Length: 373
Ligand SMILES: NC(=O)c1ccc[n+]([C@@H]2O[C@H](COP(=O)([O-])OP(=O)(O)OC[C@H]3O[C@@H](n4cnc5c(N)ncnc54)[C@H](O)[C@@H]3O)[C@@H](O)[C@H]2O)c1
Ligand SMILES: C[C@@H](O)[C@H](N)C(=O)O
Image (tube, rainbow, N blue to C red; front, side):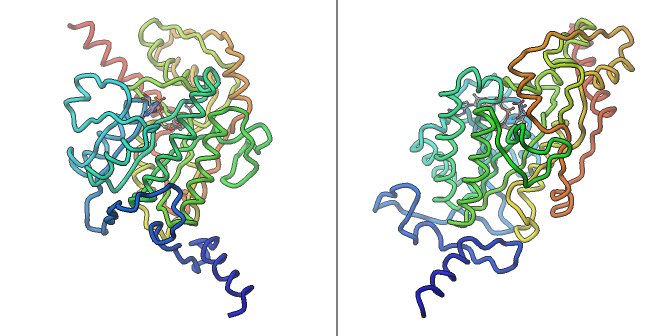
């Protein structure tokens, strides 16, 4: 076969997209001889992939943050308590330690990660470890290590052991030159935070491993996530969680963003459901490997107005944090998630009124229980 034709065929296999119906997965990593990592000659590979009928065996990294514990509870209801291992570098509180398997895992320690995956026959990995936008700007070198070097370890382990890998991205993967209202899946991405840069890198590396090595990489760009029973870890959207806590506790809230700062947001139940839905979606329904998902968009002023409907004496004041404000001003105002809705049927349940009622009910009942004790 003429060389040019042969090269075209190989390139077609590597670069083709599943959407065009002509995609051929690259040969499994171990046969390529071009592993992203030096694999010991005596390494005994066994396929950790699962058939459609098997229950996945799940590892969650960075699981003690705002989202990980909720994800573990959600997945355990579906797959059984012992099928889902939560991991982190922090010590878990008693109630989390006793609620299901927990293990120490530092994503910067590649051998430790590989040992966990092998010993527990992991088939699905949810990679939640990260430094978020505001804390990332306060410690760029740590954010670079955790968000970029850590991701490389996770990608290699996942590729070597045929895992299905979920990595969350974020509205923070866009920047001031992206269209902001709305922001589509595919557009200019030039974020100005280390967090955003590391997430664009994660999207591109995951997709590269998918096309190059056949890694089953799936990624959702989450909006700001609002949860009642877990604290946010140092992001720009944290105000939208703290407001509920303070409204119930003191009837007052000091907001660190300007009243008109519009950002995409989502209640945690929708976020966890979207995550499981994209992981369970048939591969042929995914025309892309990284999707925007959204539920609502609001400003601090809109949120305060909705809280006022429940707590008429509520007062909001503003003391703007210039770092967070600059970040928020570069992020999408509205997120276009039409591809997720079209490809795998994404549909959110919570809009602003339901979100506020649910959050205030949670904190309200919590406060009433505390007062009664
Ligand atoms: N919460 C949101 O609003 C939101 C929005 C978009 C995307 N995301 C993404 O979802 C994921 C989870 O977010 P979150 O809000 O739970 O984050 P978080 O900051 O609350 O938690 C991150 C966890 O990572 C852990 N971690 C840090 N360094 C580690 C290391 N070396 N090894 C292992 N673990 C380490 C931390 O101990 C922490 O528990 C992140 O990737 C984040 O970028 C979150
Ligand atoms: C939006 C998201 O990635 C995170 N909550 C942050 O603000 O950094």
